[in-house]
Each structure stands twice: as structure tokens, then as C-alpha cells.
Image 1 (cartoon, rainbow, N blue to C red):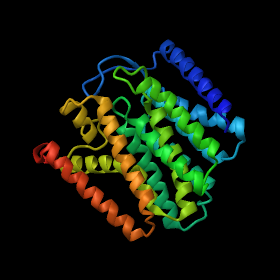
Image 2 (image 1 turned 45 degrees about the vertical axis):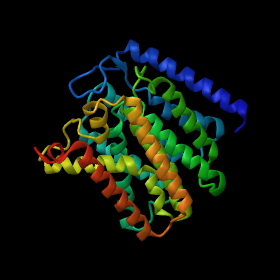
Image 3 (image 1 turned 90 degrees about the vertical axis):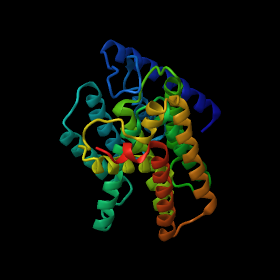
Length: 320
């Protein structure tokens, strides 16, 4: 992609985002603070719609190379955007998530693979979508984390070539445009479900392409920090006998931002930096054996768990 096309893409996506702000303000698509919020002022919700718009524009400009992926992405974006405006039954949302995940498998030519592989990938996709959605709770965290993951994938694509580089680059540009409005002390917009769900689906699409191309599961560590925060949080909530479907502020990043009063952008930057270090380590180590991947993830899990106990304390984590 030429510099001119990149510049034009930035301008077009900026314009699309600003137009959405006008529409959202007119129809009152905003996030109002409540007792669970990490913000204190009314903020436009759904700014992450730019991620889906970017992929659609990319398909128009560079060809419809991934039709099933795009259909799945649009389905997720529509149901998530509707949920941003008015809560939709979780049963309806999960059905759409499953359909989109199946479409993703079709795009990756995995739909006719072994049954265990299909089920495992479906669970991975649905779990990751929800994990990223849960983690989208403070300014900057979703955008910066996505930037780190997508930039890592783009770097690898320069030598491995597992996907169309134009799609990957446009996704990065879309996230950077979103960051301009969100990565600040007083965010102009939040990603909303339409943004967090869409960007997780986009990341998974590229990530699974890489794993299929290289037959290397260790690349799943590119999303390890979000997985660890979400999985340990769910585990502690189960121990405390809380209903895991209820809204909460129990994530580690939420404790750092709200309980320890660390500025949101510092917490977001910390998560992005840690994930970047992990990504670099994965690339430099060139590990590919499944047992090694499992061992590394287990070590990472234990270290993260110990960190939570030290910083949050056993009472907060374990006591109902």
C-alpha cells in the first residue's frame, strides 16, 4: 500500500468517525456513568464501529477476498450495535456469536476439519470475543492492546505472508484513528460492544490465519494477558459464589484503575507494554512445540496469579 493510499485511508476513516459522532449525539447513543463505571462524564458510545467500517471499505478498495469473514463481522457489529443502544437477550447474542464463529471457520477452511478442532476453535472464538468485551472498561486499553497485537501480526506478515497485508494495515489504521479519540484522559468516545466485539473478531481472524500457516499454537500468547485477566477473574468470582453473568468491577485492570487510583492511560499502557514484551519473546524464541507452549502459558498464568494475590490481597480475591 502506497503512502498516498495510507494517508487517504486515514482521512476517510477520520471523516467516518466524526460523522458517526454526529449521528450518535443526535440519537443519544451515549454511555452514562453508573456505580460500575470507570468514567464520570457522559461519553459517546460505539466509536469502535470504525473497525467494521474499515474492513468493509477495504473490501471495496482491494477486493472481496474474505466474504465469510466479512459477513460474520457485520453480523457481530449489527447485534452489538443494537445492544449498545438497548440491551438484547444474551441468548440472541450468543446465537449470533456462534453463527459468526462458524462463518470464520468457513473462511479459514476449517469447517470440514476434525470435530474436536471445530468445537475447540468455536470455543476459542466465542471466549475471546467475550474476553475482549469484558476488558474494554477504561480509556485506551482496547485500542492500545489491539494496536500491539495487530502491529505484531503485521510485522510477522512481512516475512511469513499469512494474510492480505492491505486488510491488516487498514485494521491498524482504524485502531489508530480510534485511539486518537479514546486514548486520552477525557475520552471523546468509547468503543462500545460494537467496537470491542468487532476488533476481537478481526484479531482472531488474522491470528488464526497465522497459526494455520505456521502450525504454531504459541502465537496464541499474543492475546495471553487479556485471557489471563478474564479467566482468573471468572475463577475468583466462582470461588466467591458470585453470578458470573452479572456486571462487576473485579478485573485486575479495574482494580489498578479504580482501587489503586492509577490513571487509566498508565494502566492501559502497562497492559500494552507487557503484551508487547510477551509477543517479542514469542517471536525471538521461535517455539513451536505444543508442550513448550503449554509450559510457558502455565508459567505466565502462575506469575499473573501471584501478582494478583500480592497486589489485591487474598481477602479481596477470595472472600464473598
